Length: 84
Image (cartoon, rainbow, N blue to C red; front, side, top):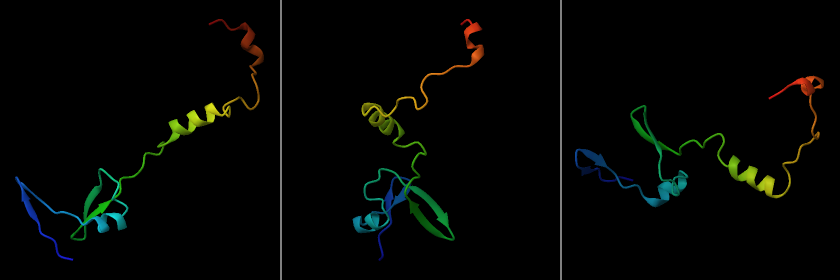
C-alpha cells in the first residue's frame, strides 16, 4: 500500500490505516516505539513496565484476605534485648 507523506510544520507525517495498527497491536496505544532498521521505519508497542498491575493485584489480594503471614509472627532470640 502506498501512503502520502505530509508536511507538518518543519516535520513530515503519515496517517496509518486503522487495520494496520490493529494487526500490529497498536490500535489501543497512545504511544509507540519508532526505530529505523535496515532502511525501514519500524513501529513497536512500548514494553510494559515489569511491575505493571502489581498495585491492583496487591489490593485485590488484601481485599480477599490473602495477605496474611504464612508463618505467623516470630522474632529472633536476641530481639528482647533491643531498644528502639
